[in-house]
Image 1 (spheres, one colour):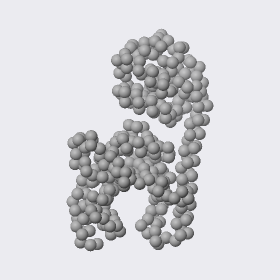
Image 2 (image 1 turned 180 degrees about the vertical axis):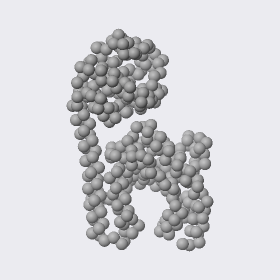
Image 3 (image 1 turned 135 degrees about the vertical axis):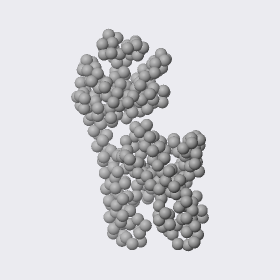
Image 4 (image 1 turned 45 degrees about the vertical axis):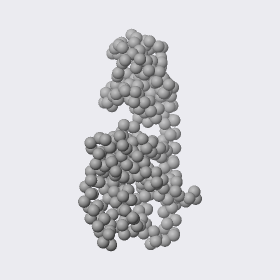
Amino acid sequence: MSSTNSEIVEEYRKIRPNYEKLTILISKLLESLLKMEEIEYIPPIESRTKTIFSLADKLNRKKYNDPLKEITDFTGCRILLYYPQEISKVEDLIKENFKVDEKNTINKKEDLPKNQFGYGGINYVVSIKKDRTELPEYIPYKNYKFEIQIQTICEYTWAIIQRKIEYKSEDLISNILSRKLARLSALLELADDEFQRIRNQGLQELMDQEISFASLLLYVENSKIIKQICKEINKKGFPRMMKEDDITYMDELMNSCEYLKYEFIGGLNMFITKENATTLFEKILENGVNISIGPISLMLMIIYFYNDGINYEYLQKKGWVDPILTILTKR
């Protein structure tokens, strides 16, 4: 290693504690954002700060004019997802909450020729947005760049195997082994698509299931529209109900479905629309009511509001009180 590289490594050794703090800060922020958006991922967020040895190795392999400014992965976080359809949600989350360096951000799948398979995943190079850098804990890191990688389980599996076999040593691997790796990549990509297809089919089959505690819970946990409605309602200022409080409404939801003669999840699902929720919560806002909302209580309120079979006396017996009681029954 040249003396210039030695100086760079020594300078990084001094500032590395800052990157270690940044790594912890960003991984906690990402976990908080993913939870807030109710995006399914595999916890915890994987994170690391580049080691001294890794930097020295990189400087020996690549040429930089100003390494400490040009290298963008001193801090790196990886978000692992179950299904490919979640990727776009995470991309939106990153673009909304971080300043993206488009030049250095890489979608490795898009960069491949159409007749090839290989390393999947997206590597975002980002920095902290101006509004967040005004917060005390982020002020020291306003000029720092870091990497956020998005991968599905299958992409991650292949990447780990491929890295063990040929990463940084491509010239030592025969064409036959490289082709076998490419075939494995293609199979895992097909597996990703199949997992997603099976999940979508399972959700469709759920509509034909009889209403029970188990089927309702599965519906609540997997319904995209319910998650979307809850997210938008929370943005309007209605606080999010804690899960342990929200689950207490499950027995009432089941009893009300029986009272209204809803036998299958699909019948209940007909009422759970964005339009129905918007109309209901605009009326609640008009009356100056502020209540906590969870997925189960949301469903319960929507079916009450849109069913003439539910009257004031019925809800009163269930323990509902004004002003929300009148809003739900004055249609």
